[in-house]
Length: 128
Image (cartoon, rainbow, N blue to C red):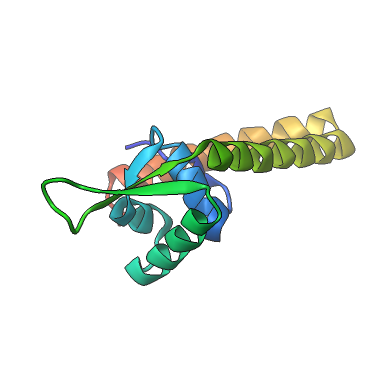
């Protein structure tokens, strides 16, 4: 099992849900969002309702099981999360410029080790 982006960066609330949908081929069950982001079903439902009112997502009930709700991004939702993503990248670039190439390389070296260790721990069932 590979770590997903929403599991490796600090994202919560509405942007976390949008990023989760974006990284899940743009259509995901609301229960999967709750599990991935470790949110309660009620909190997930509240966030989804807010995002739907803003026009960032659409909900669709499963035809076979009406209890299941699929969520997908609208073009406005896609635009919003990509704007947030690009802003985050720009902030990280400024930070790396400020700390210099050597420290940035060291940061990435350590981050890769942390990521590898986390993946190994997930395979061993330590992050259930």
